[in-house]
Image (cartoon, rainbow, N blue to C red):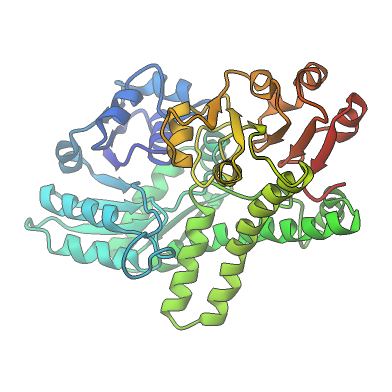
Length: 452
Protein backbone atom coordinates (compact mmCIF):
# COMPACT_ATOMS: atom_id res chain seq x y z
CA UNK A 1 0.00 0.00 0.00
CA UNK A 2 1.12 3.54 -0.74
CA UNK A 3 -0.01 6.65 1.11
CA UNK A 4 0.50 10.23 -0.04
CA UNK A 5 -0.04 13.26 2.16
CA UNK A 6 -0.41 16.64 0.47
CA UNK A 7 0.87 19.24 2.93
CA UNK A 8 4.06 19.02 5.03
CA UNK A 9 2.94 21.16 7.95
CA UNK A 10 2.14 20.71 11.62
CA UNK A 11 -0.44 18.00 10.95
CA UNK A 12 0.79 16.21 7.84
CA UNK A 13 4.42 15.74 8.89
CA UNK A 14 3.90 14.25 12.38
CA UNK A 15 0.85 12.18 11.37
CA UNK A 16 2.63 10.57 8.46
CA UNK A 17 5.76 9.99 10.55
CA UNK A 18 3.65 8.03 13.06
CA UNK A 19 1.91 5.99 10.36
CA UNK A 20 5.29 5.17 8.77
CA UNK A 21 6.67 4.20 12.19
CA UNK A 22 3.76 1.92 13.05
CA UNK A 23 3.24 0.50 9.54
CA UNK A 24 6.70 -0.28 8.10
CA UNK A 25 5.12 -2.21 5.22
CA UNK A 26 3.34 0.95 3.96
CA UNK A 27 5.20 3.50 1.83
CA UNK A 28 4.38 7.01 3.03
CA UNK A 29 5.24 10.08 0.95
CA UNK A 30 4.67 13.65 2.16
CA UNK A 31 4.55 16.22 -0.64
CA UNK A 32 4.52 20.01 -0.66
CA UNK A 33 5.18 22.69 -3.28
CA UNK A 34 7.27 24.61 -0.72
CA UNK A 35 10.79 23.48 -1.62
CA UNK A 36 12.35 25.02 1.50
CA UNK A 37 9.98 23.13 3.75
CA UNK A 38 10.64 19.80 2.05
CA UNK A 39 14.39 20.45 2.19
CA UNK A 40 14.04 21.03 5.95
CA UNK A 41 12.15 17.75 6.40
CA UNK A 42 15.04 16.01 4.62
CA UNK A 43 17.65 17.75 6.81
CA UNK A 44 18.85 17.43 10.40
CA UNK A 45 16.79 20.49 11.39
CA UNK A 46 13.09 19.80 10.89
CA UNK A 47 10.80 22.76 10.08
CA UNK A 48 8.64 22.17 13.15
CA UNK A 49 9.47 21.32 16.74
CA UNK A 50 7.65 18.56 18.57
CA UNK A 51 9.03 16.33 21.31
CA UNK A 52 9.90 12.93 19.85
CA UNK A 53 9.33 13.92 16.23
CA UNK A 54 13.02 13.98 15.25
CA UNK A 55 13.49 10.37 16.33
CA UNK A 56 10.45 9.15 14.38
CA UNK A 57 11.44 10.94 11.19
CA UNK A 58 15.11 9.95 11.29
CA UNK A 59 14.26 6.29 11.89
CA UNK A 60 11.82 6.02 8.98
CA UNK A 61 13.10 8.63 6.51
CA UNK A 62 14.18 7.14 3.19
CA UNK A 63 13.08 3.73 4.48
CA UNK A 64 9.31 3.94 4.13
CA UNK A 65 8.90 7.69 4.80
CA UNK A 66 9.74 10.16 2.05
CA UNK A 67 9.46 13.94 1.65
CA UNK A 68 9.18 15.25 -1.90
CA UNK A 69 8.09 18.14 -4.11
CA UNK A 70 7.03 15.71 -6.87
CA UNK A 71 3.33 16.00 -6.16
CA UNK A 72 2.12 14.45 -9.43
CA UNK A 73 4.03 11.19 -9.05
CA UNK A 74 3.18 10.69 -5.38
CA UNK A 75 -0.52 11.36 -5.96
CA UNK A 76 -0.70 9.17 -9.06
CA UNK A 77 0.91 6.19 -7.31
CA UNK A 78 -0.96 6.46 -3.99
CA UNK A 79 -3.82 4.26 -2.82
CA UNK A 80 -4.76 6.69 -0.05
CA UNK A 81 -4.29 10.48 -0.26
CA UNK A 82 -4.46 12.66 2.84
CA UNK A 83 -5.31 16.32 2.24
CA UNK A 84 -3.49 18.23 4.97
CA UNK A 85 -3.17 21.73 3.57
CA UNK A 86 -3.85 25.06 5.27
CA UNK A 87 -7.45 26.28 5.57
CA UNK A 88 -7.01 29.83 6.93
CA UNK A 89 -9.82 32.25 7.63
CA UNK A 90 -10.79 34.18 4.49
CA UNK A 91 -9.47 37.72 4.22
CA UNK A 92 -11.46 38.63 1.10
CA UNK A 93 -14.88 38.33 -0.49
CA UNK A 94 -17.92 36.56 0.93
CA UNK A 95 -17.35 35.38 4.49
CA UNK A 96 -14.17 37.46 4.96
CA UNK A 97 -13.00 37.33 8.57
CA UNK A 98 -15.03 34.22 9.46
CA UNK A 99 -15.36 31.61 6.72
CA UNK A 100 -12.59 29.11 5.97
CA UNK A 101 -10.63 29.74 2.78
CA UNK A 102 -10.88 26.49 0.83
CA UNK A 103 -8.79 27.46 -2.20
CA UNK A 104 -5.96 25.10 -1.26
CA UNK A 105 -8.40 22.23 -0.70
CA UNK A 106 -9.91 22.84 -4.12
CA UNK A 107 -6.47 22.95 -5.75
CA UNK A 108 -5.64 19.62 -4.09
CA UNK A 109 -8.86 18.03 -5.32
CA UNK A 110 -8.23 19.27 -8.85
CA UNK A 111 -4.67 17.94 -8.79
CA UNK A 112 -5.89 14.53 -7.61
CA UNK A 113 -8.54 14.48 -10.35
CA UNK A 114 -5.98 15.52 -12.96
CA UNK A 115 -3.26 12.92 -12.33
CA UNK A 116 -5.16 9.90 -10.98
CA UNK A 117 -5.46 6.86 -13.21
CA UNK A 118 -6.42 4.38 -10.47
CA UNK A 119 -9.03 4.29 -7.71
CA UNK A 120 -8.21 6.36 -4.62
CA UNK A 121 -9.36 6.94 -1.07
CA UNK A 122 -9.15 10.69 -0.42
CA UNK A 123 -8.97 11.66 3.25
CA UNK A 124 -9.80 15.14 4.58
CA UNK A 125 -7.25 15.77 7.31
CA UNK A 126 -7.50 19.57 7.35
CA UNK A 127 -10.20 21.19 9.49
CA UNK A 128 -13.05 21.90 7.10
CA UNK A 129 -16.59 23.31 7.15
CA UNK A 130 -19.47 20.87 7.09
CA UNK A 131 -20.21 19.47 3.60
CA UNK A 132 -16.79 20.29 2.14
CA UNK A 133 -16.58 16.61 1.17
CA UNK A 134 -19.43 17.29 -1.26
CA UNK A 135 -17.32 19.90 -3.07
CA UNK A 136 -14.33 17.56 -3.19
CA UNK A 137 -16.46 14.71 -4.49
CA UNK A 138 -17.95 16.91 -7.23
CA UNK A 139 -14.47 17.82 -8.47
CA UNK A 140 -13.23 14.21 -8.32
CA UNK A 141 -16.32 12.87 -10.08
CA UNK A 142 -15.40 15.08 -13.02
CA UNK A 143 -11.94 13.54 -13.30
CA UNK A 144 -10.82 13.04 -16.91
CA UNK A 145 -9.94 9.42 -16.09
CA UNK A 146 -12.29 6.63 -15.08
CA UNK A 147 -10.77 6.38 -11.62
CA UNK A 148 -13.24 6.03 -8.74
CA UNK A 149 -12.89 7.95 -5.49
CA UNK A 150 -14.15 7.66 -1.93
CA UNK A 151 -13.90 10.74 0.28
CA UNK A 152 -13.39 10.25 4.02
CA UNK A 153 -13.21 12.77 6.85
CA UNK A 154 -10.48 12.01 9.41
CA UNK A 155 -10.01 15.21 11.44
CA UNK A 156 -6.93 15.63 13.62
CA UNK A 157 -7.23 16.21 17.34
CA UNK A 158 -3.59 17.01 18.06
CA UNK A 159 -2.41 19.46 20.67
CA UNK A 160 0.82 21.15 19.64
CA UNK A 161 3.57 20.42 22.11
CA UNK A 162 2.17 16.92 22.71
CA UNK A 163 1.39 15.92 19.11
CA UNK A 164 3.50 12.75 19.13
CA UNK A 165 1.93 11.58 22.40
CA UNK A 166 -1.51 12.39 20.99
CA UNK A 167 -0.79 10.36 17.85
CA UNK A 168 0.67 7.45 19.79
CA UNK A 169 -2.12 7.26 22.37
CA UNK A 170 -5.14 9.22 21.08
CA UNK A 171 -8.37 9.76 23.00
CA UNK A 172 -10.17 8.85 19.79
CA UNK A 173 -9.70 8.55 16.06
CA UNK A 174 -12.70 9.74 14.05
CA UNK A 175 -13.42 8.45 10.54
CA UNK A 176 -16.44 9.66 8.60
CA UNK A 177 -17.48 8.26 5.25
CA UNK A 178 -20.26 7.70 2.77
CA UNK A 179 -23.09 5.47 3.91
CA UNK A 180 -22.77 2.93 1.11
CA UNK A 181 -20.96 -0.39 0.58
CA UNK A 182 -18.10 1.46 -1.13
CA UNK A 183 -17.96 4.01 1.68
CA UNK A 184 -17.94 1.28 4.33
CA UNK A 185 -15.06 -0.46 2.55
CA UNK A 186 -13.04 2.77 2.44
CA UNK A 187 -13.73 3.41 6.13
CA UNK A 188 -12.56 -0.10 6.97
CA UNK A 189 -9.33 0.39 5.03
CA UNK A 190 -8.40 3.47 7.06
CA UNK A 191 -9.72 1.85 10.24
CA UNK A 192 -7.33 -1.08 9.76
CA UNK A 193 -4.33 1.24 9.44
CA UNK A 194 -5.04 3.03 12.72
CA UNK A 195 -5.91 -0.29 14.41
CA UNK A 196 -2.24 -1.29 14.05
CA UNK A 197 -1.62 0.65 17.25
CA UNK A 198 -4.87 2.33 18.41
CA UNK A 199 -7.36 0.20 20.42
CA UNK A 200 -10.34 -0.49 18.18
CA UNK A 201 -12.83 0.88 20.70
CA UNK A 202 -11.21 4.30 20.32
CA UNK A 203 -11.71 4.38 16.54
CA UNK A 204 -15.10 5.97 15.94
CA UNK A 205 -16.93 5.86 12.62
CA UNK A 206 -19.68 8.26 11.52
CA UNK A 207 -21.13 9.71 8.38
CA UNK A 208 -18.86 12.26 6.75
CA UNK A 209 -20.92 15.29 7.77
CA UNK A 210 -20.89 14.36 11.46
CA UNK A 211 -17.13 13.90 11.33
CA UNK A 212 -16.55 17.31 9.75
CA UNK A 213 -18.78 19.07 12.29
CA UNK A 214 -17.30 17.19 15.26
CA UNK A 215 -13.89 18.75 14.71
CA UNK A 216 -15.24 22.32 14.61
CA UNK A 217 -17.44 21.68 17.62
CA UNK A 218 -14.66 20.13 19.72
CA UNK A 219 -12.39 23.14 19.21
CA UNK A 220 -15.26 25.55 19.82
CA UNK A 221 -16.08 23.86 23.14
CA UNK A 222 -12.44 23.96 24.26
CA UNK A 223 -12.06 27.61 23.27
CA UNK A 224 -15.32 28.37 25.08
CA UNK A 225 -13.95 26.94 28.33
CA UNK A 226 -10.83 29.10 28.12
CA UNK A 227 -12.83 32.24 27.39
CA UNK A 228 -15.23 31.40 30.21
CA UNK A 229 -12.49 31.13 32.85
CA UNK A 230 -10.79 34.23 31.42
CA UNK A 231 -14.04 36.15 31.84
CA UNK A 232 -14.05 35.09 35.49
CA UNK A 233 -10.40 36.13 35.84
CA UNK A 234 -11.39 39.77 35.29
CA UNK A 235 -13.95 39.46 38.08
CA UNK A 236 -11.35 37.78 40.32
CA UNK A 237 -8.99 40.72 39.92
CA UNK A 238 -11.79 43.16 40.77
CA UNK A 239 -12.85 41.23 43.90
CA UNK A 240 -9.41 39.94 45.01
CA UNK A 241 -10.46 36.34 44.48
CA UNK A 242 -7.89 33.90 43.04
CA UNK A 243 -8.81 32.49 39.64
CA UNK A 244 -6.69 29.36 40.16
CA UNK A 245 -8.57 28.61 43.37
CA UNK A 246 -11.91 29.22 41.64
CA UNK A 247 -10.91 26.97 38.74
CA UNK A 248 -9.71 24.30 41.17
CA UNK A 249 -12.99 24.38 43.05
CA UNK A 250 -15.28 24.14 40.03
CA UNK A 251 -12.95 21.66 38.32
CA UNK A 252 -13.63 19.09 41.05
CA UNK A 253 -17.22 18.89 39.79
CA UNK A 254 -17.22 15.73 37.67
CA UNK A 255 -19.72 17.34 35.31
CA UNK A 256 -17.20 20.10 34.54
CA UNK A 257 -13.72 18.68 35.14
CA UNK A 258 -10.40 20.55 35.43
CA UNK A 259 -9.17 20.58 31.82
CA UNK A 260 -8.97 23.88 29.91
CA UNK A 261 -9.81 25.94 33.00
CA UNK A 262 -6.37 27.57 33.11
CA UNK A 263 -6.72 31.33 32.91
CA UNK A 264 -4.16 33.22 30.85
CA UNK A 265 -3.55 36.14 28.52
CA UNK A 266 -5.64 34.27 25.92
CA UNK A 267 -5.65 31.24 23.65
CA UNK A 268 -3.78 31.06 20.35
CA UNK A 269 -2.77 28.46 17.81
CA UNK A 270 -3.94 27.56 14.35
CA UNK A 271 -7.31 26.05 15.26
CA UNK A 272 -9.35 27.65 18.00
CA UNK A 273 -10.00 31.12 16.57
CA UNK A 274 -10.26 29.90 13.00
CA UNK A 275 -12.66 27.07 13.84
CA UNK A 276 -14.90 29.15 16.11
CA UNK A 277 -15.16 31.84 13.42
CA UNK A 278 -15.93 29.15 10.86
CA UNK A 279 -18.70 27.86 13.12
CA UNK A 280 -20.03 31.43 13.44
CA UNK A 281 -20.08 31.77 9.66
CA UNK A 282 -21.89 28.45 9.20
CA UNK A 283 -24.54 29.47 11.72
CA UNK A 284 -25.03 32.80 9.97
CA UNK A 285 -25.24 31.02 6.61
CA UNK A 286 -28.10 28.87 7.89
CA UNK A 287 -29.86 31.86 9.48
CA UNK A 288 -29.04 30.85 13.07
CA UNK A 289 -28.06 34.36 14.12
CA UNK A 290 -28.48 33.91 17.88
CA UNK A 291 -26.29 30.81 17.77
CA UNK A 292 -23.70 32.72 15.75
CA UNK A 293 -23.66 35.57 18.28
CA UNK A 294 -23.19 33.09 21.11
CA UNK A 295 -20.08 31.53 19.59
CA UNK A 296 -18.68 34.86 18.39
CA UNK A 297 -18.61 36.01 22.01
CA UNK A 298 -15.90 33.37 22.66
CA UNK A 299 -13.60 35.22 20.25
CA UNK A 300 -14.56 38.64 21.61
CA UNK A 301 -13.68 37.50 25.13
CA UNK A 302 -10.31 36.23 23.93
CA UNK A 303 -9.55 39.56 22.25
CA UNK A 304 -10.68 41.40 25.38
CA UNK A 305 -8.30 39.34 27.51
CA UNK A 306 -5.30 40.27 25.35
CA UNK A 307 -6.24 43.95 25.34
CA UNK A 308 -6.86 43.93 29.09
CA UNK A 309 -3.39 42.48 29.69
CA UNK A 310 -1.69 45.29 27.75
CA UNK A 311 -3.86 47.94 29.42
CA UNK A 312 -2.81 46.60 32.79
CA UNK A 313 0.88 46.89 31.85
CA UNK A 314 0.43 50.48 30.67
CA UNK A 315 -1.64 51.51 33.71
CA UNK A 316 0.78 49.90 36.16
CA UNK A 317 3.81 51.56 34.56
CA UNK A 318 2.37 54.98 35.46
CA UNK A 319 0.09 55.20 32.42
CA UNK A 320 2.86 55.23 29.84
CA UNK A 321 5.34 52.76 28.36
CA UNK A 322 6.70 55.20 25.79
CA UNK A 323 10.45 54.69 25.51
CA UNK A 324 10.37 51.98 28.18
CA UNK A 325 11.93 48.56 27.73
CA UNK A 326 9.50 45.68 28.20
CA UNK A 327 10.90 42.13 28.12
CA UNK A 328 8.65 39.51 26.53
CA UNK A 329 9.40 35.96 27.66
CA UNK A 330 7.94 33.52 25.16
CA UNK A 331 6.52 34.12 21.69
CA UNK A 332 5.14 30.70 20.66
CA UNK A 333 1.44 30.30 21.38
CA UNK A 334 2.22 27.53 23.89
CA UNK A 335 5.25 25.69 25.24
CA UNK A 336 7.03 22.83 23.45
CA UNK A 337 6.23 24.09 19.97
CA UNK A 338 7.64 26.71 17.62
CA UNK A 339 4.19 27.50 16.21
CA UNK A 340 3.30 31.18 16.62
CA UNK A 341 -0.03 31.28 14.80
CA UNK A 342 -2.49 33.53 16.66
CA UNK A 343 -0.10 33.69 19.62
CA UNK A 344 -1.15 36.18 22.28
CA UNK A 345 2.41 37.53 22.15
CA UNK A 346 1.81 38.88 18.64
CA UNK A 347 -1.05 41.09 19.78
CA UNK A 348 0.61 42.14 23.03
CA UNK A 349 3.78 43.17 21.21
CA UNK A 350 1.83 45.08 18.53
CA UNK A 351 -0.11 46.98 21.18
CA UNK A 352 3.04 47.78 23.15
CA UNK A 353 4.72 49.07 20.00
CA UNK A 354 1.66 51.23 19.37
CA UNK A 355 2.27 52.66 22.86
CA UNK A 356 5.88 53.36 21.71
CA UNK A 357 7.46 50.78 24.02
CA UNK A 358 10.66 48.95 23.15
CA UNK A 359 10.06 45.18 23.26
CA UNK A 360 12.89 42.74 23.91
CA UNK A 361 11.73 39.22 23.06
CA UNK A 362 13.14 35.82 24.01
CA UNK A 363 11.75 32.46 22.91
CA UNK A 364 13.87 29.28 22.85
CA UNK A 365 12.39 27.96 19.58
CA UNK A 366 11.13 30.95 17.55
CA UNK A 367 13.46 32.86 15.22
CA UNK A 368 13.74 36.63 14.90
CA UNK A 369 12.56 36.40 11.30
CA UNK A 370 9.36 34.65 12.38
CA UNK A 371 8.78 37.10 15.24
CA UNK A 372 9.10 40.14 12.96
CA UNK A 373 6.88 38.55 10.28
CA UNK A 374 4.16 37.87 12.82
CA UNK A 375 4.28 41.34 14.39
CA UNK A 376 4.35 42.86 10.90
CA UNK A 377 7.58 44.83 11.12
CA UNK A 378 10.85 44.67 9.15
CA UNK A 379 13.68 42.67 10.70
CA UNK A 380 15.67 45.85 11.30
CA UNK A 381 12.85 47.52 13.28
CA UNK A 382 14.55 49.38 16.15
CA UNK A 383 11.70 48.79 18.59
CA UNK A 384 11.85 44.98 18.34
CA UNK A 385 14.95 43.38 19.81
CA UNK A 386 15.38 39.61 20.10
CA UNK A 387 17.53 38.17 22.86
CA UNK A 388 19.50 34.92 23.16
CA UNK A 389 18.40 34.34 26.76
CA UNK A 390 15.68 35.43 29.15
CA UNK A 391 18.26 37.17 31.29
CA UNK A 392 19.51 39.18 28.31
CA UNK A 393 15.96 40.23 27.44
CA UNK A 394 15.38 41.49 30.99
CA UNK A 395 18.64 43.49 31.24
CA UNK A 396 17.75 47.11 32.15
CA UNK A 397 14.05 46.43 31.53
CA UNK A 398 11.27 48.24 33.35
CA UNK A 399 9.14 45.07 33.31
CA UNK A 400 8.99 41.55 31.97
CA UNK A 401 5.90 39.66 30.84
CA UNK A 402 5.60 35.88 30.56
CA UNK A 403 3.53 35.04 27.48
CA UNK A 404 4.47 31.37 26.89
CA UNK A 405 4.57 28.77 29.67
CA UNK A 406 8.04 27.38 28.83
CA UNK A 407 9.28 25.29 31.77
CA UNK A 408 12.59 27.16 31.89
CA UNK A 409 10.81 30.36 32.92
CA UNK A 410 9.95 28.85 36.30
CA UNK A 411 13.61 28.21 37.19
CA UNK A 412 15.27 31.45 36.11
CA UNK A 413 17.71 33.23 38.42
CA UNK A 414 15.18 35.86 39.41
CA UNK A 415 17.46 37.50 41.94
CA UNK A 416 20.03 38.25 39.25
CA UNK A 417 17.27 39.40 36.88
CA UNK A 418 15.89 41.73 39.56
CA UNK A 419 19.33 43.17 40.29
CA UNK A 420 19.81 44.04 36.62
CA UNK A 421 16.36 45.55 35.99
CA UNK A 422 15.33 49.17 36.51
CA UNK A 423 13.45 49.85 39.72
CA UNK A 424 10.67 49.48 40.50
CA UNK A 425 10.85 46.15 38.63
CA UNK A 426 7.49 44.83 37.43
CA UNK A 427 6.41 41.27 36.56
CA UNK A 428 3.32 40.45 34.49
CA UNK A 429 2.64 36.71 34.50
CA UNK A 430 0.36 36.09 31.53
CA UNK A 431 0.38 32.31 32.06
CA UNK A 432 0.14 32.08 35.86
CA UNK A 433 3.22 29.87 36.16
CA UNK A 434 5.42 31.94 38.49
CA UNK A 435 5.70 31.84 42.28
CA UNK A 436 4.56 35.39 42.94
CA UNK A 437 5.23 35.28 46.67
CA UNK A 438 8.90 34.41 46.08
CA UNK A 439 9.20 37.17 43.49
CA UNK A 440 7.68 39.70 45.90
CA UNK A 441 10.23 38.77 48.56
CA UNK A 442 13.00 39.49 46.05
CA UNK A 443 11.50 42.93 45.46
CA UNK A 444 9.42 42.59 42.29
CA UNK A 445 6.01 44.21 41.94
CA UNK A 446 3.96 41.30 40.61
CA UNK A 447 0.80 41.04 38.56
CA UNK A 448 -0.91 37.90 37.25
CA UNK A 449 -4.13 36.99 35.46
CA UNK A 450 -7.04 36.64 37.85
CA UNK A 451 -4.83 36.90 40.94
CA UNK A 452 -3.78 39.75 43.20
